[in-house]
Amino acid sequence: MRFGADMRPFPQAAYWRVWHNMQSLIDRGMDPLRVLIDRAHEKNMAFLASLRMPGFGGMNPDWNTVKGGGGLAVPELRDHQFRVLEELVTDYGVDGVEIDVSYPGGWRNMQPEDAERMLPVLSDYVEAIADMVKTKSGGRCDLGARMYPTETLNREDGLDVREWLRRGCLDYVAPLRYGYFLLDPNQPIDWLIEIAHAADTAVYGFLQPYVRDPATGAPAVEYPTPEQMRAASANYFAKGVDGLYTWFLHWPPGDTERSILTELGDSDLVMGKDKHYVLSRDVQNGEPYRYPQPIPFEIPHDATGKPFSVPFYLADDFEDATRRIGTVRVRKRVYDLVSADRMDIRLNDRSLQGERCLRTLWDRDTPYNGQWLEYDLRDVCPRKGYNQLEFVLESRPADLNSSLRIEEIEIKVGYSIF
Image (cartoon, rainbow, N blue to C red; front, side, top):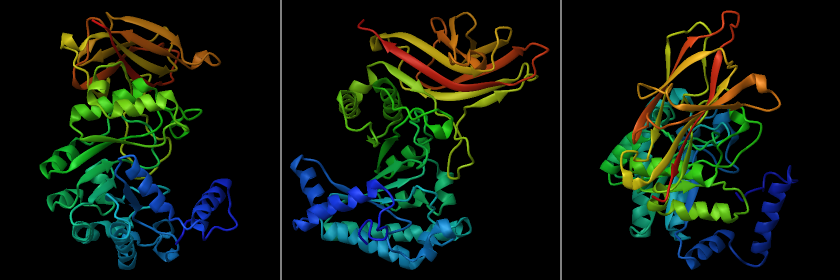
């Protein structure tokens, strides 16, 4: 079904524009998808068609998982999507097709009670898709998949990614979680890189578009700076991904966005420049199909002596002098902190008490809410790879019984000429 055919009259301007833009091409005898494919090839780019698998326009509403339907547990839905993929491969000659099983908008691939029994069924289905793609295209078409970042999340939605890779079904995988648009330099995909490379399958690190989002308590959306995008990209490269995958850059692309895209294509450009790591925050609601984030978290007023740890990964090599690292700063935003509080902050079991600390206001309009603490690291340095930041409350005023809350953690790495 053509997009928008079931929406007229249109409920919003965006859908109205899509419909009439497409219609203007159709009226001139042009196929909108063919226009995109030809334009990509003119620019020496491959064109990959991504298909959201759990639903399609005009399908039986009883199959809709949001309404309690079976989703991909329904054979008729799987058959329809198979035919769409077959059409893309045979009639359009795309360079690749992508099965998207990390679906947004509250959709699931199936109901939780169906997930376990559907694991082998969907593995056979993906294998059949892979066989069709290779046969129909003569082996010239890639098959990729977007899926969840953790193995547990995938299996809970009927996806046995490990088995798909064991059978050699996929040419690449792109892990992401829809509905969570924060750029995560610590996405937990080490397991996927290991098993994908063992199966000779590429892994593309997915770079989400925001560093702050109202879904995690921010007042507005904030796009990443080049230093922030560079930090997440560097972590992916250091962990061994084969490429990067991104979307939703600030539109229309200006000089900043074009420089970001240039750097993403070259790991050497990414690794040897300033980086700004922003640890991702957890969502404020109980959204399903998410992996937990270490911040924010609370330190109760009476939890003196108890350590609270935050793990994070850094791609920079701090011991190699040729890397030209000049500055390293760790920045933390602490809610309800007062000057009388005593807290020991440790990096990899070494206290930061001897390092220079700059305190600034959290917010000029509500300065009593908390402070930013920024440590200029000289003697205590992080290491390449996994690190751990530890917070230990030593004392809090006896007549103040609110909890401290660690809201944000950032690491800035500055490179110099020499």
